Amino acid sequence: MSGIEKLQALPVATQVTIGVLLLVQIALMITALVVLARTQQPVKGLPRGVWLVVILLGQLLGPIIFLALAYLHNRDQREKRKE
Image (tube, rainbow, N blue to C red; front, side):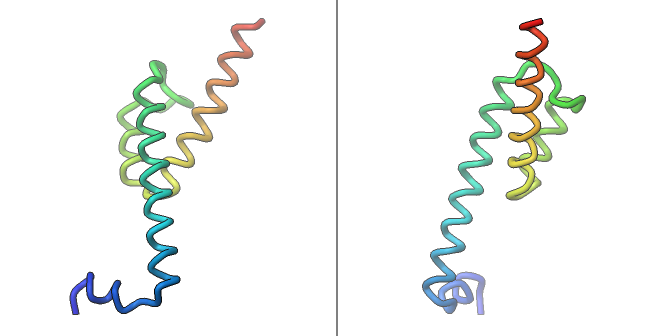
């Protein structure tokens, strides 16, 4: 049985759940890559190349971790500029 046949054998609700999770993962990955491309400085001390690997290979958690840390990093930078 191939992978496609195994997927087709799953209940419809499971197929829909997998599809939604796949779309969320792709959306998070694209968003994280756009944020990374716009970021000039290292985020939380890690260079952009490392973040690229984390985003691409980190499945669902990699982009979430990057986006959370990038948000905190940007917030800290804005606060430093206000002082």
